[in-house]
Length: 103
Image (cartoon, rainbow, N blue to C red):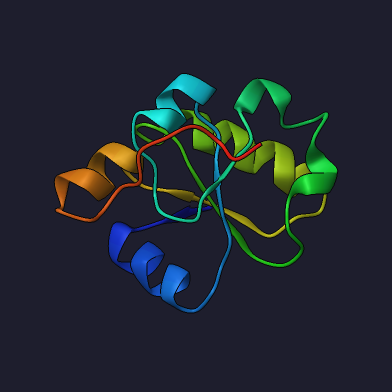
């Protein structure tokens, strides 16, 4: 249910969608480019917005994404938690996008 940072990078290149389950403020402070913001507290209500197929789930450090993956898997989705979250992504020198979610 977890994916390493290296495998996450490859999954992104292959086109796997990314769901960021941090708060809107956290997302705005820097997120993986192209990640869809669906805060964990909203995930159940917004389940229809989660793309079909395999999806990568990221948060700040990996804790909330594990909870989100559990919810998504119970709903029949193929979801994977990104180990180390956005902190590890940015810490490895990968680009993050600043700004709020698109309206």
